[in-house]
Length: 114
Image (cartoon, rainbow, N blue to C red):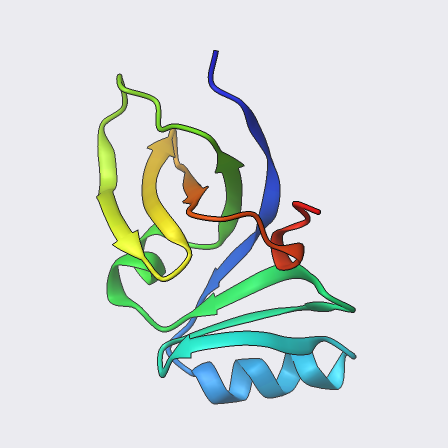
């Protein structure tokens, strides 16, 4: 059985810096910014929202990211599995709603693993 748990919320944008500033003003901290198009924000050391400036992500829209130990095999991917700094990432649509998956390479406090 595939294990899944809530991860964080993906918020695609075309105005990364402005969006980060808005969330920072709401007392969220930038926990990790692996590149110029991505920022992970949260409270304390726990990730709650990922802000991403990416055309495909914007087309999918905002939605949840689940942390999982493996990807389902019977899904039509909107974003095929790809290696990202944290592990393996993929996204699909369930009806009109996006659902994203992340397999972590290593446990980390940021994603609530410890």
